[in-house]
Length: 333
Image 1 (tube, rainbow, N blue to C red):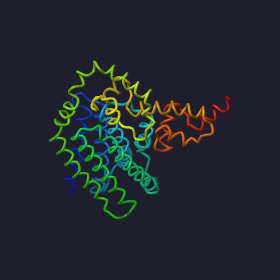
Image 2: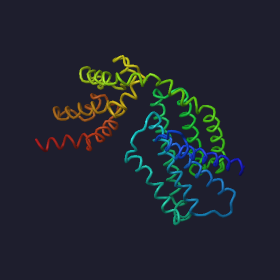
Image 3: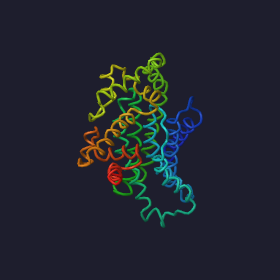
């Protein structure tokens, strides 16, 4: 068992080294995936040697816990960057703060004075809280993935989720053995390796096949860009709930596989960011012109499905909330 779990951790380190240092034309997604593999390997190797060693360095124990805290952010932002590099916003670094703090404080955080009095429980709840978010994100983005990419995302998401749940079920639920964590990850890593070695070229070739006409189409991007702007300003499709790239492609007759690179290169933003920019402009106008209409009603009228998503998008664009924006206008008036 020691050998099997150790080899699982070592395989994970080798994949981390490849994606961080040796992968050709490394992208942000490569670095995030490499960080994910490195974090998982440190966590699992710590667990493995904790089981089979009478003494273990306090620093190594805490580095394993720090790595555990980083798994969720690395996986979440890897999925967001899989179809093209996006700027790592302050949200990413904010989510990395707990792991970074634990790593910095690793010489001093002890098991009985910190981890066993609530620290480890908080760590486990943090990791499982990412699971539904990541599963939802993978489902939401699946239309933008190739078939092989979709399978890879499913394997990666499910594999990491099972490992995190194994640790949670051991310490919080008390229904499984601690050894399940490293054993399951060893099996998951072998599965990851088998898939990557078998499909690595197909991952790249599928993507090239999907976008093989992009280069020839770039001279038409300016026409497509203007067509989309005209469609949004005259037809106001952004007011529809659940408006998608597929609907935009159908309405403008622009090939769907060209839309993602079109938004990235011509608009320098994602489709969701472009969509929300129009929705927020409309919301600002309605908040100004109709002070008696509730914020939630304006959110739904502008195409948002929930008030929380409206508040988040509005604050991302205007740096304030819809309610605060309306209050500031009333104060000025």
